[in-house]
Picture 1 (spheres, one colour):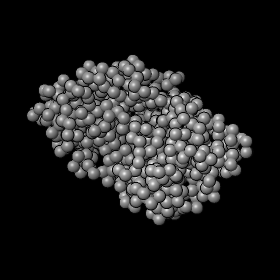
Picture 2 (cartoon, chains in turn orange, yellow):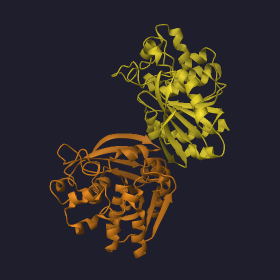
Picture 3 (tube, helix red, strand yellow):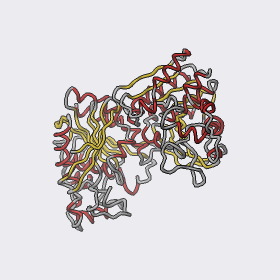
Length: 277
Length: 277
């Protein structure tokens, strides 16, 4: 692991780091905020997964998470959203596929299967890097994210309920298998067999018997992607059908941007901190 | 005035606007946050002046001011740092002069005197635009800023104490007349006669009899510009010599970035709100 930058912020340290990722077969960059409490004892780890087009940096700049994370004593880990680099296959003009659009899955189709293994990266590889290099209490982990990253958080939590004690989502893509902006990516990453797509779709996972203690979801009513891409009603129905507790807050007048996320960031952080105590 | 964008944030509205500026003889962009309290009554106005290389956007993205401004009921106005545009003279490779480096002064030297009139823009022109278009209580104004913008805030407050009820600064350039990164700009904007520079230098203005009720200044001890460019001790001496109250907080381990600014933003906002009540 190499340190790109560190800066004191809200009493803690906001850092950016790179490492050679085996899962993604390229160098990967990620951001970690370490709160002041970590001087005394290892702190719980909260994973934030970002949305389409983002890197580790968008939430670091605009997420407004450091003040409350410093108050609550949470380490915040913000990975990139895809493999990147000269040799990573990409569709430069397509913001819904390739670099910036890893969809937190392990691609099975050439030429993407070599690098696009964000599921394994987030679930297996990066946690080891965090455990080895930061004052992290890995027995207390939560996960959340935005849009594509909220899809990542929900699906990763459903498949790893023993690992994550809490999961929340800002404006999640609730059913990426069928949404216009994600279905073509699923096809290219995972092939034609839609049965394989179900492993990376929150509503399908719930139908298929995967469970989590409870979800917290915030969604803006003025979000331009609400009806076509996000569709929180599908998650509500899937949860209701199996009795999975879901708190779905529809936030009047908020859009899909970090103006929305930052507004409700503190609430999510407090919610995670309660579950990670 | 034209609206570029608006988004709901922390219960208020963060907007970006443009207008044809007479003072700067070009289109100018600025950001305004209007808190939820403005629905009921006009709100106090707090001006934030940004530093070298910034536009209106840096503090909008990274300043973390909206939550507390929404709580306190403050309108936050974030202007650009210079005129911009195809016909505005600039030194493209010099980040300390020209676009992004207006130094909040009225240039007197050709070819800069046509556009580089940021003092008149901030003091005379933009307040009229704000008063005409926003629910602003213009009898309650404060001003603050960062680095070059903190120099702007201090000098503008000293010259307009009847207008501004409060002034604070993050890492101010305290004596731009003599600092390496600002002296060449003063020379090009204002000419060879150093007497003319004193109108835009906080320590010189204080020496020359200008006064303000009190200043609040925060400065990081790990700021790379501390000794050469900023030199808070010069402001402390100037204030001490005439009995001008100054609270100078040296913040251990903080640098010159928005990680520093955002950490102490809430404290400055509360301080302004008290003075603007």
